[in-house]
Structure formats: C-alpha cells, structure tokens
Amino acid sequence: MLVRDAMSTMVLTIGPTHTLRQAARLMSARRVGAAVVLDPDGCGIGILTERDILNSLALNQDPDHETAGTHTTTDVVFAAPTWTLEKAADAMTHGGFRHLIVCDGREPVGIVSVRDITRCWTPARQPAPTLTV
Image (cartoon, rainbow, N blue to C red; front, side, top):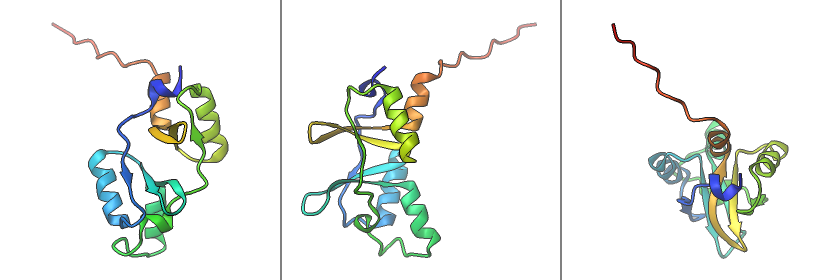
C-alpha cells in the first residue's frame, strides 16, 4: 500500500503569525494533530504539531503571544505519494515523529500520520454478534 492510499488530503494550513492558541483551536476543530505552516517569506513549508504546543505550555509560555512560526519544525522530512507505507513508517520511527507532509514536487498534497498507517494495516473491526434468546 502507498502513502497516497493512507494520507489525508484535507490538510490544515496556517501561517507563521497564527498564535499557538489559534493553531490549537483550528487543530482541535479539525481533529488533527498537526498543521502545515506555510511561510513564503521564511522557511517555506514547516509543521506545527500538538507536541510543539504542549512543549510551549510546559515552558509556561503564553499561547496567546507565542506564534506558530517560532515553534514550527522547519527541518521536515517530506514523503512522496508513491512511497510505501513501510518507508513512511520507517522514516517516522527513525526520525522520532508522527506526521509526514506529503508533497508532489514542491506542493503539499496531503499529510500522513502514524494513525493513518495503523488504520491501513489493521483489519476493520466487525460488529460483535448479538445474542438472541
């Protein structure tokens, strides 16, 4: 199975000036653990994860003043849609992260998470049989 089969194409994108609170609200509303940060004037494409927000809060930083740009990971490993899920899982395991931005050329086209991969590798649950007496 390939990354394109598992990835989400509905990617939350934010700018570097979004506050961490704004990012957290958007991530919560979309029920995602990461946002792609697009900064055409800076690093280009980065990622902000729930872990980045958690680390900022642990340092007692104010989420209304801290910006996504200062907490964005810019040293990003990108996946191609044609990668196998095994290659994506290997990259995540060795890199110590749970999300990969999927790019087709230079454009982000999706995001794949450990959860997405696990969902593809785990058989669908069948409903429990009901007992009739």
